[in-house]
Amino acid sequence: MNERTAAVLEHVSDEETLELARALVRIPSPTGKEGRQIAEFMHGWLADNGLNAGMQEIQSDRINVWARVDGAKPGKRILFNGHMDTKPFDDMVIDPLGAEVRDGKLWGRGACDMKSAVAGAMIATRAVARAGIPLAGSMIFGSEVGEEGGGWRLVDLVDGPAQCDAVVCCEPTDMQLHLGARGGFPIIVTVKGLATHTGTAYKGINAIQKMSKVITAMYELPCWQVDDPVWGRSPINSMEIHGGGKVTASVPDECVTTFDIRLNPNLPPEKLQADIDGLFERLRKEDPQLDVSYKFRSFGGGTGISFTGGRPASDMPPDHPLIQATADAAEDVMGTRPKLQGFPGGCSMGVLRRRDGTEGVIFGPGNLEQAHSVDEWIEVDQIGKAAKVYAALAVRLLASNP
Ligand SMILES: [Zn+2]
Image (tube, rainbow, N blue to C red):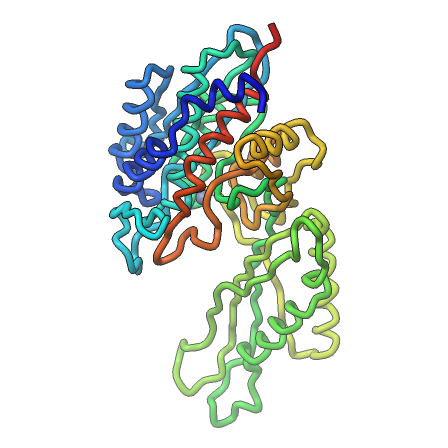
């Protein structure tokens, strides 16, 4: 660890980072209904701590928050990003707002995804300001509403007060380094049948029965078996199904299945599209009664980032300076280098990189398996460490040579 890293880490306390994370968990901010309280609390904390901070109103009760530390010299603008919204509280088996600390864990909605990381980034931003190390460029903290609903209101921040050249996405990676985010191939498959009375079912075409063949064949495509040392396998999930039920004692004439498919970098959307087109063609040949088609499900919330169609994974080369600096900062704090992996879902890093090639990395406390869960928690030990890694990373990237 060099002198400057040591200097900035003096301004990060594990206890204070945990208490800030707990304060954030106690304020409800379910996606779409974030409310003013969470934003006003975050902005108040940043401003009271002497940081240049502001709020960006998306709607009157949905507000993005930012803060920045600008160096005297020009240089890269690095955005440390974490969303302030959470999944809803329904069905949780713990007090979602309790922020209880028990068994070395912090419990509550947003503890893992991702208020602990947000607290870490806030503490790190203040640490960089307090350490007074000469900087070239800017450390920017930006927290948005509407991420969990797929609205990507982050785009409003980066087109406004948080313009950046690189993004450190603080989503939960269990303190490992994720090189990028998966792409997606969200499709809705429709099978048409022919309705008849159940008594003469053999004269109809049962859309549900035909769909079961289609789903089985989709899962048997060889592309799901291709393993990648960093990313694992590309997952397919038949997420939702509807069919029949229009009238009783009748053969269903339609069945619709929504597939949530995520793409590793080695499975481009064009390749999968060709695979599925080829598969459906073969199935139709084998069964002339099969009437199957698909269309893309559209995404986004009218923020200029909505799209229809397949989208490729967005990743960074492992030897990129931003990736190496993140690994170095993590090693400064944890003593070991993080593993290089791929983020299993979508996140801000993928959105910005796909949009205009913004450099990015994903690193954060908490395991994605506990995100969105009915008893969401995070290991307390990771919370303060993440704050330290963010502070160390900012200094590595921005400290200016005298
Ligand atoms: Zn998240």
